[in-house]
Structures are given as C-alpha cells and as structure tokens.
Image (tube, rainbow over all chains, first blue to last red; front, side):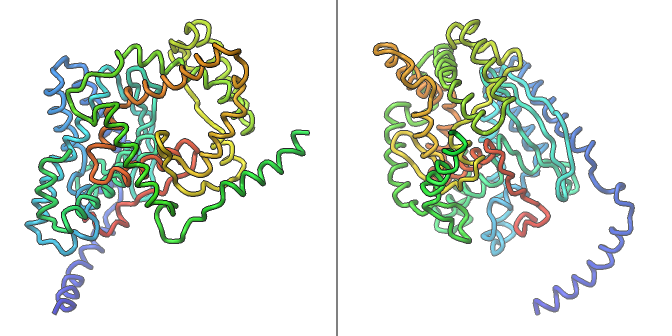
Length: 201
Length: 242
C-alpha cells in the first residue's frame, strides 16, 4: 500500500518538479549578494542591540528574537535530531521543534553576551555547494579578531542561515552531538527529550 | 648539519605520533576513549572546585584587567617559541610579524602585560611544534585527555614536549627569574580559563555529554588552526532536515 501511495505522489510531484526546473533559475534562487545582505542586516541588528545601552537581560531577549528571525530553526532542529525524527509523529516533531527553538535561542543568545562592547563585520561571501557562505570577522573586547562563517540557504522558501562556524567549530555538528546525547539520556524518547529541552540551554 | 639531522628527527617523530591508527568508519580517532573519559571526569571535578562549576552568580577569580594582563604576559613569553616554529614550518612572513609583535609588546607593552601590537594590526599568529609536525607530514594520532592539561592528540603531545625543550627562553634565565617565567606562564593559563569562562562552563557543565562535546570542539578548532579543510555539510544532502 505504501509503495502505491508513494508512486502516486511521485507522479504528482514529477510534473511540478519539471515546471520548477523550467523556470529561470535566478527568478527563484538566492544569490550571493542576497546572502551577504541577509547576514549584514542580521549583524546590523545585533550591533544595534549591543549599542542600545539596554540591560543585559533585555539584550538577551533581543538576541533571541534576532536568532529566531534569521535562522532556519526548524531545519537545524530536525538535522540535530537525525534519524530518530523519522519514526516520530508530526505532533511529537512539532513539539520538539518548538522546545528546540527556545533552547537554542537561549543558548546562543547568551553567547552574544561576549559581543557587548565589540562588533562583528561582514567581509565577504561566496557560493559553496548548493548554498552560500558569508564570511565575517568578530572584534571582541580584549580578544584577537576571529572568523565567523554563516551558511545561508532558502530551503524553507525564506532566506535564512542554517549553520554558524566559529573558528572551525560547527554549530550543526555541536548540536547533533548534544541532542544525540540528550536523546540517549532520555532512552530514545522524543517526548522526554522535548521536556528536557524546555529547561536546557 | 641541520639538513642531515632533520629527516631522522622527522622519522622518529612520525613513528611516535603514528602509533594509533584511525579505525575506518569511526568519526574520531579515539581508541583510548574509556581512559580519556575517566581522566576527563577527574579534570571536571578539579575545574569545578577551582572555578565554581558554572554557577551564574560566581565572583570572578581575578579582576578582569588583571586576568587580561596575565594572559598577555604569558602569550608574550611564548612568542620566541612561536617565531621558531614559524621558521621550522618554512613560513618567514608570520615569523617576521611575530618578531615585530614581540619587540613592540615587550617595550611599549611594558614587558608584555599590555598588547599594543594588536591595536596596530600585528595580531596574534599562534603556532607550536604540533603544527610544525603537521606541516612536516606527521599524522595526528589518537585523541588524548591529559590530567589537568586537558584535550590533545598524540601529535600535539609530542609537539608540546618538543616545544618545552626547544623554547629559546628555556635556560635563558638564571635561578630566581626562571621561576617567575614559569609562574607567569601558569598564571596566564588560569587567567585564560577565566576569560573564556562562559564558553568553557557551557561545555563542561551544560552539555548532556561534556566529553563528546569537548572532543568535537577541540578537534574542529585544532583542524581549523592547522588549516585542514573541514568537510562541508550540505543541507541538500541531509536526509533528516526536511
């Protein structure tokens, strides 16, 4: 029964795919300048928060909001969960993604604390595989400048980043390790993992 | 003389660094994982005692400007060794820039406590004998966790032992001064633990598996320092992120 169903959906999907392929590519696809502009805009907002003179807790809230707006959190969440997500129900998956969003924005929002008193600037962009890599340099108080790379795609239909690489350290790889370890601790239960994520980060 | 000596040195070092081979299909070359995990647990216990275990309201060990000064001072003491390694790697340009940095920070930077060189664009270009071994073609070997000193690899362990011996400052100071130098380097390590406190606390005290997280971050960052191209993760080939 399954195979019949997938064959039918394949038949429906094929002409749609052909139609998409026939459209001029640049009418749809993200280009290198848009990718660069996206990160420029996101970092502009980060720098504005840094210079706003707000209290630290207020700044963290703002950083969280920026993270959620510019990152494809659903993709990052699903990728971090890996094969365990395949057998999960849609409801479990949605609850997990929602909990993951809170967790990751708290975690990385807190990380932005170090940016207070510093700045971060876009220095270049290039196409890479099927997406774009935007290069930036962070100048933090009392530290040597270091490189931060942003991987940008439009898989969800919106231009968003899906990975950050800070001096070689890859956010997706780190989250896959972390979520994998949390899932093990919760004996493979996605519901228990979701509950644990609500207080983690 | 040096030319004749170099190949035999490389051979010995290759033999030492290459003693554990990577198993095909494993993500990390970590054959001593059980032992490493036990050492890591001890290290975390020591860190928790000394640095508070990631409690949010902890008072910093040192006032921030003091910590910065100590870290700068210890970095400056490391520069002669850095310059030597740049030269051993056949990289004269960073050796020259690091020499200018050493001169500037030792004089205008009051013996290395301040870092005016970074402000004029002579930023830190750190290296060590572990990198020199990499440049010479030695394999990385297994991942290791040392008591107190923490994560390293077989190649980097050999590298840090060689760095100790070939350091131009080694034996350059008489009796009392050489203890100040050793003390300065140690204080620099403590200061850096404090400066990078949030990041380290996150790894050690907020991860579900701090060993796995530390191993991943250490190796990724080390490969980046060594200029080893990381595998690029392609989201369109990811079967899980839909």
